[in-house]
Amino acid sequence: MAVLCANLDALQPPEVWVAVQIAIDTGRRPEDILDLPLDCLQRDKDGAAVLVYDNAKADRLGRRLPIGEAIATVITGQQARVRARFPAIPVGNLKLLPAPRANQDGRKAITIAMLDDRHREWVTRLGPLRTQDGTEVDAARLVPYAYRHTYAQRHADAGVPIDVLAELLDHRNLNVTRCYYRVVGTTTP
Image (tube, rainbow, N blue to C red):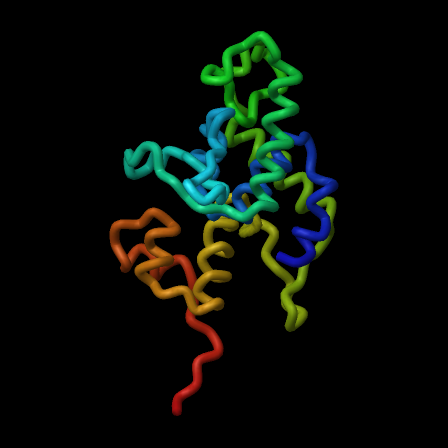
């Protein structure tokens, strides 16, 4: 992850870069990220950033996920690019990640195929990636959906309780959440 994050600036086009940033920072599924409307960023009563998204897989609409200011800044930058590209289109009609072609009204988002293809090209250009112990990572496993698992692993490693992690991942079943991370470094007293 460190190598991928250090090379994010080489990921193009900007819509794919933003999609990957959101995936890394929020753990949302690629299809949920690509479906984000332009106005997906809100603030709670205390002014903290909240991502509003639809969990298409579970048909749970209008989900709210607290997010950090760094990813909120990425989203507001993308919102500005979209508004500059489609100044006459009402905000409610625009996607956060509009397709670059054949999309005169900004209603059509980039596709999963485009996200996957550009991500694969980027990973391939980085060359062989290795874990901290020197093991080469299977590049075929480096797909946008994998960021959902790394999000879960980061939170599990930080000691986030499984019920909270399930809520963050928008899972109803804790057994599903358990499949998203591995318990490592445990010791017996």
